[in-house]
Image (cartoon, rainbow, N blue to C red):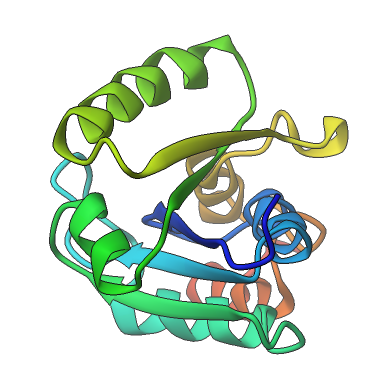
Length: 165
């Protein structure tokens, strides 16, 4: 991979999980710069956390990576990529079901911006089951998510949904 490549890693990150962080940090070792594109107002789903909270969670979790930036956006991913002069959209894949959706999105993005490549990175096996929606469900019912999310997210869940003794 050329050393001058900037990658955009877009998502809602509601909340960010250790699986997301795995993809982002592996991307930080692969690309010169990774911009975590935080979708402020997603059209597909309602978020549990505000965009400011989600951005703070990401920034705290990624503070040790000087080549990783967090940018909130409300535009096409390819427009975000153009603003950051990015050549790559980085997406993590857990399973075949992820691939079907992400493949369609990659083809649409290619139609809009043929000069921007989508790169898929496979989830590490220990994170292949992990999803933000699953984490939210566990936390909502008082289960521990401490090993599934960064500490700031776990603390916030503990405030919102105190664990049952």
